[in-house]
Image 1 (spheres, rainbow, N blue to C red):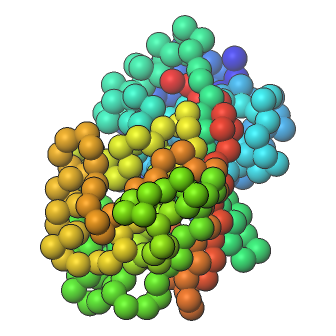
Image 2 (image 1 turned 180 degrees about the horizontal axis):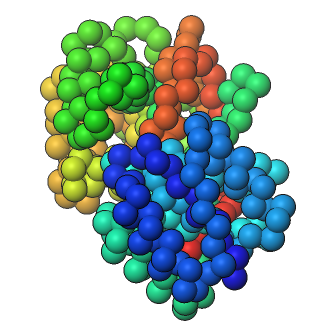
Amino acid sequence: MRGLLVVNPAATTTTERVRDVLVTALSADLAVETVITKGRGHAAELAQRATETGIDVVITLGGDGTVNEVANGLLRDGPNPDAPALAVVPGGSTNVFARALGYSASPVEATGELLAHLREGRSRRVGLGHARWADQSRWFTFCAGMGLDAEVVGRVERKRSGGRGNSAGLFLRSGVARYSAGAGRGHPRITLDLEPDRAAAAPADDDSAAGADREVDVVVVCNTVPWTYLGDRPVRACPEASFDTGLDLLALRRLHLSSLLRITGQMLTGDRGPHGRNVVLEHDLDVVRLRAAPEAPFQMDGEYLGQHAEVTLTSHPAALRVIA
């Protein structure tokens, strides 16, 4: 079996020692080639090339951004049953995708789990989300967001580019700072258009987006659970989300501090997830269209992608084979 190990040396917890341990372990079972990425977009190029050169599995050592790039490279021409499988070893700060697949947060422990899966021939197909905006399109593995969520991601990216380390505390401080500055309040409002349309079946007092008010201040779309982690604690924005169903959605009609604090607590404790009159929570959607006037910030898999007036998100079942 031929493998390609894609290493992002800039990822938060990726070190030469971890890389060397991983290469040594993989070499016992794979003819493995190791490539260290040189910058943004390189991992996607490597994965696309792997689909053309007979590679059986592409393994990432990096964070969720590296995983996203490799997934997009493998799916450059759409889902392909003959494409290489994707395997992940956590090397970033959060590693949502790897942990959602059941891997340990420790790269050493995850390497052992990956080797066991490879030896047993264990793999599965997972559904992914796909986004289109303006003249661009891209796949996402676990989440997308518009509004305050994306504002915070953008702020964190700017701080990290200035040399700050990534951490749960940095996200919390950035979220408080953006809220205090008025992010998400007032305009732009975000309009939801969901398929299948829930309006016909929804009772008049339903809190779902099928009610009369489809305008919200912030939207999070999840392809799995959790949405993210706060340290070691999973944040369950959409508790029913799964790689085996369509897209799930959490939106807040209005951003009020009291509501944000209550919903944050609900996401961190218990299995019910966010609820209340200010909450829109939808499960197993085929298509989610988000429209903002004039524009609103947008992110996917923890990467800030700028301000956009309209984004269409679609669910693609069994899009990618993963080792898990």
